[in-house]
Length: 244
Ligand code: ADP
Ligand code: MG
Image (cartoon, rainbow, N blue to C red; front, side):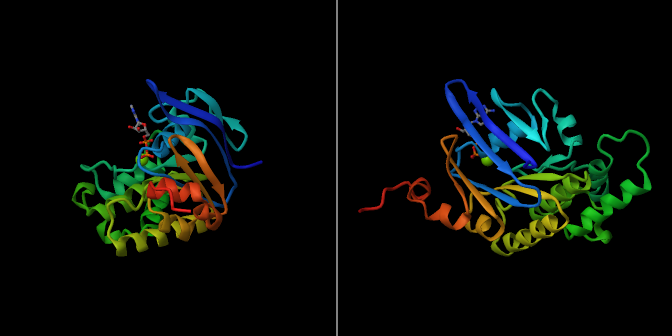
């Protein structure tokens, strides 16, 4: 059984079918890439899988065999599914360490345990945020460091599967290289990763499986090298039909 099974999910906004009968399976331990032009439904797909802020209109999502239908976002997170957002989000008035602690104490009311402190520090260090900077306010960090903090906070939750929405957006080339390395390190921890990215080269260097969305539907899915060679994918990305 796959770790994540998404079966025929859809989400409409009025007459717009943002996600239209999408199905896929993510095996434990893999990095599963999702590509597609802007507006193709990638972020909406994450929204309906995580229930934040809404679930699907139809279809089903199973995490390790457990049907997530109707569960609120926080219950889904507690089952081991965490996500990051396309725009870096953090509690800007809290320190770096306090942000990560929110992840590691999620769903565990009361005073943070020593174990939660350890998990927060470990996640921050894994994401390259050094202990000397743990007391800085999140709002003072650079865009790149805020993205690293958002990742660290999600990792501190101890997820089995992590959904990353365009982690490379608005980063410079060297920062993109650095985030590829951070995502690899996360996967080496045994966390399964579903990675949305608009930039194909980013996905190609990380993913074992690639799915391309277009107009809310699955356009192609399979081994990354063959998927990007698919003429329909080329057309969706370049927007032109190549002359025969
Ligand atoms: P992507 O992440 O691939 O760029 P999105 O999933 O954000 O695409 O959006 C898919 C389509 O759904 C777009 O046309 C977008 O404008 C629309 N959409 C997304 N979220 C909403 C919403 N909350 N209300 C109305 N339309 C939305
Ligand atoms: Mg998006």
